[in-house]
Image (cartoon, rainbow over all chains, first blue to last red; front, side, top):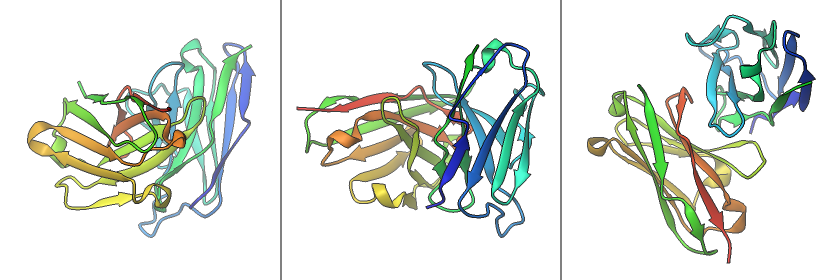
Length: 112
Length: 114
């Protein structure tokens, strides 16, 4: 299975600060289609996960543009330009290139 | 509005069987792959398996193969997860998800304990 490693495990930031979360995969996530199926989801406290970004950098329509994703092959980053209160929770990267689909261990974003 | 509602969780004895359901609305169920994911208390997300839109094919994570069976009834807009010979390590919240984890249900908690 592809191992997804996220760092840091937790992040404590004030509202308005930028955030950056790293996700590394044990194998390249570049698929035979030429697409890279690296995605991000957010699980707010007490809630189920919600979609954020797909194929590395594409934001779902409801996601604010303060979020961005980047990376290639085995190294990926999720950035938030200015953290807002609603951004708190656990961020997971997950890969959809190699079956079985696997998730990172999560990065908890907390308020300082 | 897309909605997924899981049910069927609860307290079960080790070795027992349990069937979870996920009733969906707000989209054409029969057009989508559907997936199950679980989350042990305080832990991360673990993929269980998936089922093709017409129900003709299922795929399971190797660690889940053998004790979990995914099925669906497109006429009832319902996805199922049959769990057998449950053990304490199966204690988790079980989520159904649409397609590429685009939408998730609220989850149903399964607690395996004597």
